[in-house]
Structures are given as structure tokens and as C-alpha cells.
Amino acid sequence: MRILIAEDDEVLADGLSRSLRAAGYAVDAVTDGQTADSALAAQHFDVLILDLGLPGLSGLEVLTRLRGRNSKIPVLILTADDSVEQRVRGLDLGADDYMAKPFALSELEARVRALTRRSWAGAQAVLRNGPLVLDPAGRVATLNELPLELSAREIGLLEILISRPGRLVGKEQLVDHLCEWGEEVSTNAIEVYVHRLRKKIEPGGIRIVTVRGLGYSMQRVAEPGEGTAGGPAASAA
Image (cartoon, rainbow, N blue to C red; front, side, top):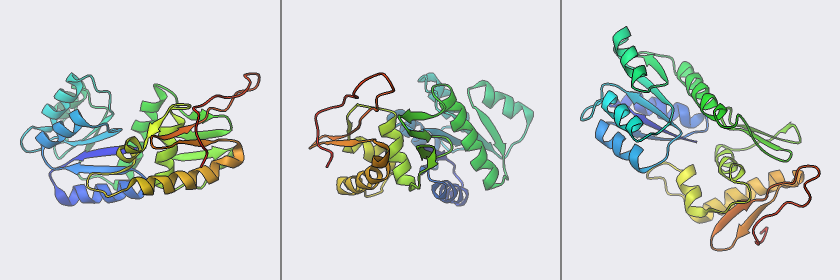
């Protein structure tokens, strides 16, 4: 799950980035409104943390353009101005939540979790494939109702594969989903993450198949009475 932080206070942005990375998110940060707007137009993010006092385009202008593109990404506004007028204006323009500076990092993390739960609840609160269950908002997974010990990267990999059962996901797609700007992650590293995740979920009968030269697919497990699950012709190597 990727988060974009648009905050011109570099010390605050760095603290937020470190805290959220420790919680298992991929985090990118920008310090001006124009860069934030360009990033949001070009790439997918799961949450936007948006300071209103950005140079260039203001936070409210960034928000207006974002909603003008019909993006439904959850937006948490940060501002040093805690006036009711500012809060109302931001919420009316499409923000989902609001925090006044200063704030506790633990509260911000809790609000990010709440936003992601709300976002996923609009579609599907948890993702399932047979006995494998992922709570994307809580960043936890279970197999046969027992918790799975997964790294942040493995959770991110599971998220994209389980949400596309039976569909091919290319290595470059996985890099974009899992990695931050400027992070050097090779496709060989992706193979390592896939190998580790595969070993942990295979005891539940879940297979990640390799379509050589193209990418990976998680086979859909047949529900009782459905018969054999299908999937693309591939190797399990």
C-alpha cells in the first residue's frame, strides 16, 4: 500500500515517512503542490496526506484537481490553521479527514488505518482466496485461521496478487506497487519476495504460478462444489 505525503516542512515529512514505513507502508514525499498534483495524476496511491500550506499550488488546489479527475483516494488534510472555516472548506472539497498541527504520530497512523478500512469497506473489507485471508487495512493475513508471519514487502505482494486471482501481474507492476521513488529494487529481488511468500502459503493449497518472462498469478482456490480451480498455463517454480 502506497502513501503520498505532500508536506513542505521537510523535518515533519521525514518523521511521517519514517513512522509510516515502520508500519509497513511504501511512502513517497513531495514538498510543493505542483509536484504533488503531477504525482497524483501520473501514479496510483492508496492514501494522500496533504498539507494545506504548500508552496506553488495550495493544498486546497491540489485537492480540487484531484477530485476533478474523479479520484477516490482517501485524503487526510494537515494544517496549522485549526479554524472551523478551514476544516469545512477542506471537507467540502472532498477531504476525508482533518488533523491540526501539532499532532501525535500514533494518532495519525490510527487515522490512516481508519481511512484505508473505510476505503476497502466500500469494495471488500477483506480479500480471500480459499483459506487465505488478507485484511488490507490492518496489514494482517491468516491461513487456515492462523496468523501468517509476513514482512511488509510480502504483505504488499500478497495484496496485489490476492486481489487479482487468476490474473497475470507483471514484475514491473509489482515493482511499482511495492517500491518508493528512487528505490532500487530489481526484478530478481521481486523473485525472492515471491519465493518467500509462496513457501508460506503453499501449506494452505494456494499456488503462485510463474508465467516465464511475463509475471505471476495466484490461482483461485475452488469453493466447495465448484470443481477444480483454473489458472494460466505456467510453472510453479
